[in-house]
Length: 442
Ligand code: SF4
Ligand code: SF4
Image (tube, rainbow, N blue to C red):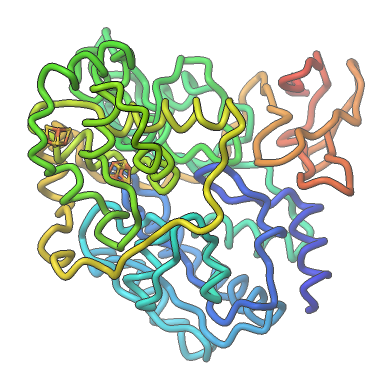
């Protein structure tokens, strides 16, 4: 299959990164790639979907990877996985003989092994320069569900469902497959309900996810819904206002530099230096422009804030806020950021997953969340028009229309970065607004 044919199939069937920001996958295809990496790090605590999908669908996922490799002309496929995912590894190994380009690349039991730059370094030894894309080093990275969706797209089955791990303070942690547009409350009910009354919901992993309401909607990038007590450390950190975080930094940042010493991007030679940033931001020293521009190389992993800083300060949140402020004022990432060699201390400064889980108070919730693929059909779905990076899709249906599963509900302009959005169930369009299309069952 040619690159152009595959790109068309991915675009028409709505395939984007099934996690993170939701970059349209067709736009990642590039004939300069020599290596395709499947990211099965599942690097955030408590998440369980990727390893289980790889175990169950390794043949399908390897087929999709092989098709991508053929289309872009890449000779190597690396399945990046942790040794502890034994069942997923066994499943991949049982199929490797049929996929000559593929090999397994082992990742450490550490956080954030799934950060793209870290995954690439661990499995190929290549370092992506700050601000650059993996393709500059000949690599394209896809996650497990993205490749599963690509496999389906090759049979003209569009993306209409999402696998989500529902865990934390719920009766039966579970990984479910639900239609896009399902609300989080339904997911919590599928996990047997919350075990506590006063809880908060994290949309995504505990390190990088944000607070969400019960009626937040599943999109193509929803990976996890985590229920935690309202006064849990992680929830409290998310609620803290930046103005308070800055005052705390002024009062108690002792410049121990632990945040910088453990920063995964800094250890790979990128210029981000959270300790320096805290000094400049909290003292109002705007003369040190480089420190602020270096924030563009922060990946928001949260190691500095949730693991490294014993004063419980918030470098990650403040960096994110400053970065957003710079962007809002038209400042973009410098074209060529300075960088250094990978730190010789890196092997000793990797954050062990077990210790991270204990330190952030997640040990009681670190449980299996078995895959349950029974069909879920809510009465009502609210399908977001913007589930990916790029132009939001424009509705092609009208209020009152009868719609069927797999039908295109909305499409992006062909000349813009974007994707089609498909209907997840048979039903009737009840409402359309700028944010979503509401479909009722039947
Ligand atoms: S770890 Fe905390 S106290 Fe130490 S330099 Fe970083 S922000 Fe300051
Ligand atoms: S969030 Fe903190 S530890 Fe992670 S890359 Fe940014 S500065 Fe480094």
